[in-house]
Image (cartoon, rainbow, N blue to C red; front, side, top):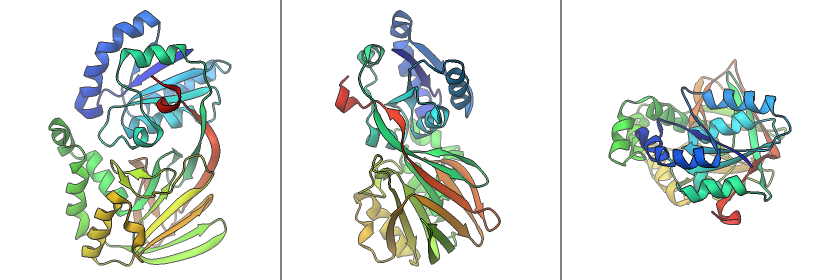
Length: 313
């Protein structure tokens, strides 16, 4: 089986690349290609180019990095049924690996994938279109959580938190920083043709799997292969109660609050009456505005995934 390893050299402040250098000899011995990305979206462009030039060849793309790395692999594989996706979790949050499973950082993982001839799992993915467009497989957020993710990803503090193995705390830092400044706003959701309007919305999350933010159970019942998108709407909360609700997300108990609504569907349109940040799998997904609504559509069983717990490693 053709295997291409895609390494994010910046994951965990370069620790992922440092660990991967130990595996380079086995890659060369087993004739496994490896790409070390040079810039954002590099993996997307290289994957699309390779898959376009080899339309009949099945290829396993093994991502070494965090959720941002896997987000790029999913976008690179979109539209190519011959692409198979696997991961080695080496980032800060690692929600992709938490749900979809992750291979160990070992020579055995590479050898096993090289010899793999099993059946991949079909998983759902979700297409979004606003002022930016693309695919996500974990979740998409609008509002407060997207602002927190954007601030954390842009911050020079992130590398210091990662250096001391406290990468997850960067999100808590910016949560508290924005908590008393953020202004909730009115939002309108059209879900499978039915309208829902909410006042004082803190954030809306479209979830394809349960986890986000480094293990928080934003949508405990979400299933990435059921053909359904889970929508979580948090609205009309005081700031202190919002903080309590946000903490409860770690345990998946936030759905007990009357200010947290859980809907489900396949096609979504979201409108706002001001501006709101968007994140897709934790990566910047644009800005939602009154003139630029957001469209979201789930595509059932649209990408191929290789799990460690079903196929071994």
